[in-house]
Length: 468
Image (tube, rainbow, N blue to C red; front, side, top):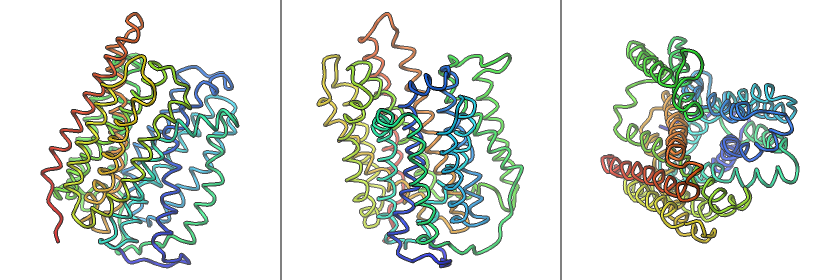
């Protein structure tokens, strides 16, 4: 699958290039969680209501998820490095504008622009890694990349708490400026550009159908709990939005089947490992974001920890993930992803159950150490193999589209996991029943997440083994 590389002034050390891609991806994923920590301070400073604060969070996530497929294909059209740099530049500028915002409306608009930049950047990273590294080293590269991505996902609350406490809410956005500028210059110098083998055509109807369908789906998942899964405004309801999403996405599939060069080549799903790995990516993201929501509430609401203490209590998870993911990537190159995915998902499920079953209202952070190590090891054994197996046999011409699908599955899975966990907590835990009801609801939510992970482990057994 490795593509030809144009040098365009870039040095050819693939590991330096990987470091640049990891740095940029870290910024994007960090912003999915770091801003949440600043919510109380932003509400006071900007005189924002809860609805406006939620859109400051969700405007970014919604735009990010809805545009991944489109920008994945755009990378195939004009070159992944070009779109990567444009996305990184747009994200960096939007971050500065976020920090300069003086009203909730301004901040929402600039967060949406951040989401556009993120959606442009993220799919290109997997394409560039696949082009830069030969097949025998690709798993190791994906292992390092996914370890950094996992670290970004779980370090947001801790880093955000420290920044907001010391430097104010704007600092969570201004952090992106120096790092973004460094990453842009480093990309121009260190990341080579894959040479496009053939010209491509764009599909505006497919873009419209995919974007609106995914927007409706992710909007419903993000906003459903806030609207009690009922009416949003007038005749518009969450069920109606989901129905519209289904109609739009089914129409998109039917349209794509007729196209000579579709936005999403449906032939990708004829590759059994791509289809299974994409589903597993959705499942692991579902469990990750559902667990993050429950864990933050469990540590802060049940155990009375501060945001910083809650973040620090997750360090065993972060350290285990960071240690295991690169090793799992190298093992994938040697033995294939199937055994790692089966064992990793099972261990991930066991750790999630431990987070739910072990603590009570008198527990300390120590009760989470072993289950979070299991979560980190299990997640580390899963992330790189899923990505490697999904991208292993994809042709260079379709790698952008495949990466867009894979990353869309990750974002939709995260939104779905948070929505399901939030709905269970909302329905089972009431203010009148207090801590006992919350603990029961948290255990139910985590049992559901663990069950989905076990189903993913069963699905992984159906993957084709690595060809030697």
